[in-house]
Image 1: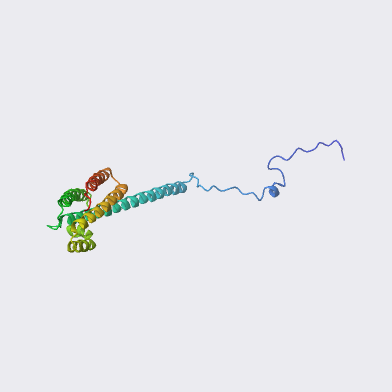
Image 2: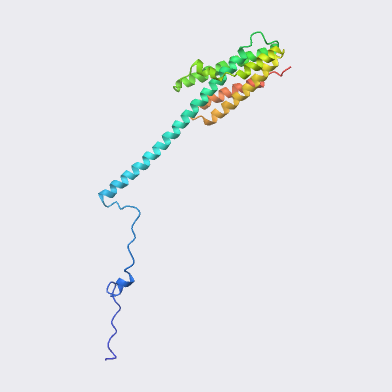
Length: 209
C-alpha cells in the first residue's frame, strides 16, 4: 500500500451512496393551498371565492329581514298603545268631575290622536298594513274593570288619572325601545318626536286629589 496515495474528495451532493438511507424517509411537504398553475385549480379557487360571497350575502339579507320584522312589530305595538290611550282618555263622558283632570284627558286624547296619525302614515309608507280590528287588540279589560269599580266608588277622576299616568309611562318606554332598534333616520326622527310630545304630556299631568 502506498502511504502517500491521495485521499479521495468528499462525495458531491447526490453522489453519496448512503443518501438513500439518510434522506429516504423525508417526503416533500404538500401545500394546503392548491396551486393556481392548472386550469382545474383555478376553477376551484374561483368557485370557493363565489361560495364565500354567497354566504356573506345570505347573512346580510337575514340580518336585514330580522331588523325589518322587529321594526314592524314595534310600530304595530305603538299604534295599538296609542289606540288604547285615545280610547281611555276619550271614553269618559260626563263621569269626570274635576275640570283640571278633564282638561288633561282632552290634551292626552288630542296629542296621542296626532301621534297615531303620524305612526300609521309612516307604516303605510313602509307597506305595513294596519286595520282598526288589529289596532283595537291593545284594549285592556283590566282598565275597564278598574274604571267601572272606581265610578261606583265615586273616585273615577283619580282612577282615570292613575291609569293615564301608567299608560303614558309604558308608552314612553315603548318609544325609547323602538328608537334604539330603528334602522332608518326617518323612523328615528318620528320616534323622537313622539317621545318628546309624550314627555310634555307627563310634565303637565295634574296631581290627584
